[in-house]
Image 1 (cartoon, one colour):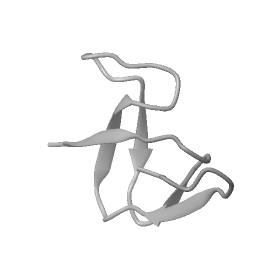
Image 2 (cartoon, rainbow, N blue to C red):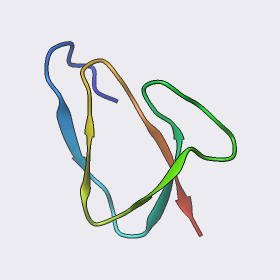
Image 3 (tube, helix red, strand yellow):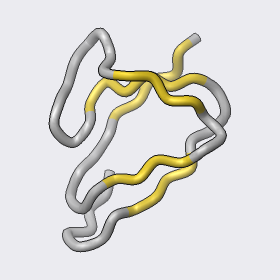
Image 4 (cartoon, one colour):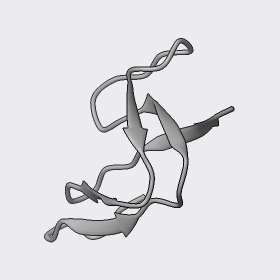
Length: 55
């Protein structure tokens, strides 16, 4: 979650494969897209993201 109303925030992703379930505009039980860990994601001001680890 990025509670800052003005600035984008960067978060480091742990290693592994991650499925985006909710982003700033969409939600879905089947997942929206896949991300690879070890890098980072950027969250726009006042938005959030829900990820689940792909096993």
